[in-house]
Amino acid sequence: MKKLLLIIFSLFTLNSFSQTYFPFPDSVGIWRQASSYTLSPGPQPNALFLDGDTIINNKSYNKLFRSYTTYNIDTNNSLYYGAIREVNKKIYFHPDSIFNLIFVYPFCNVAPIDFNDEFLLYDYDVTIGDTVFYPTFDSTYIVITSIDSILIQNQFRKKYNYTSSSSQLCNYGSNNSYVEGIGDINSGLIIHWIFSNWIEESLNCFEDDEVFYSNVTDCATVGIKEEKTELEVKTYPNPVSEKLFIEFSDVNQNKQIEISFFNISGKKVYSSVLNQSESIDVSNFKKGLYLLKIKAENGQSKSTLINIQ
View 1: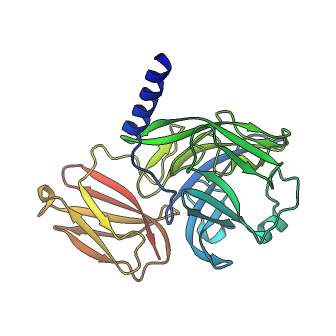
View 2: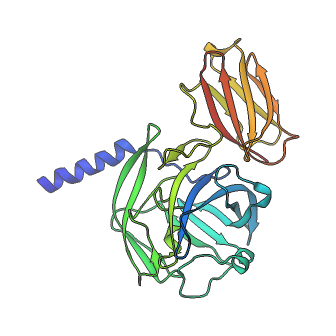
View 3: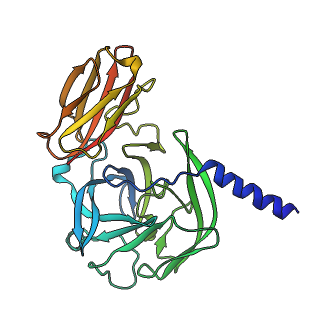
């Protein structure tokens, strides 16, 4: 009877807290990390961010870049790191042979990497007791031991906890869990494949156009978290190539609303004052990620990432 009650409670907890599936970002996403190498004097900051699409082997991917500055990201000098895509709640990564030729991925692979193939990164289509295999990387597999939820910005996201099996070449971090729409919220995006004797990684913060998650107190992004009370406003479409629509709630109509666009390096590239809902022509903007800050006369504000394509 006690076991039955425990099972019912577990199912109730999962169904109550995480009914909505949160997909991986497909246009806007930044993982700000710190990497500690064996011979390095201390943690080295870096960021992985999505910017643009690509086709590889007739499959659509989001391009992933690496920057060695985490806050004022220089997109012109960032390195193409590979590509990711989501299919049926599974996240795949396609490595780049040129990056590996110059910098070498810190992977824990035993077999040679096939740069014409993709590798499973996260599997969200699993249940308790399932085994997930990573044959290229140290013939490793993980076993899902439990699934619970984590509250991020007033929304519960599923967290998948697991145990791992490997020959100790792969570094699985200290918490052995990953979260919907983000990945590993403690040890970085690709911690599954990191060579444990070479490098350790930690996630400082993650953000996309829907959520901001931080493990540290100073993970500000061009003031993205400075707002006191969030302004009721909708912006769409995102990604956008021509007109970005900005819609205010009725209470904010006919009030002065200041909008500002900042590029990913933190430079203000556009500002205007609106008195009502309207559209902004962004067709002349350079393609890339922008932070849109919207501020009303009463001090309410909102910040969101916009992907201009």
